[in-house]
Image (cartoon, rainbow, N blue to C red):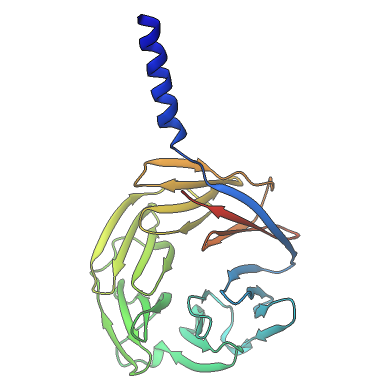
Length: 263
């Protein structure tokens, strides 16, 4: 009887364990690339890079380029809308928007705004707006690029921003103490807790993030309370990019793409 109880315990444990599935990782293809930054893909099959401060849009048939020497270094690129790409030149406090042919459609110099703005983080928000972290008051705001109006929506941040990412409705940031917060377009701030020390990090949604440390890639799920190492063939890499189940590993020789299915 005792042996039967032990067997049933082991069997039930095995069933529970088998239900915890790791992400499925399948190598797709590789691209030879020698540049400064790989920025990701869009839904039309183009990928985006920066090399020698030239922003490029590339597929198998064509390469489009944009450069603006007068504004210095490109600090941030928002690719959420491939029909309205946003480039941020922090040293000149300026945003440039481009169409899908990389033609310049708008230039916004925040230094010329009636309300003083010194932007250190930007991103596309909903309703013709841009997220802007204004270091003048250490608060997050929304800039309407059609009416050229700006409003502050958050209380002052207590620590400097270490890393950030945004979508149309939410601005996520990790501060210098590795605390993760999110703010919606109404200014509501939610604390998500601490994240581990990282070299590169991507926030997938409000419960999942992926990060690398010493070329080890980890998927962290807050809701399931799990940490899973993503098994890839590269032993070392510079950075990674993840979006819509495509993981791109950026090495010294090129980009390797993996299809990842997260349970």
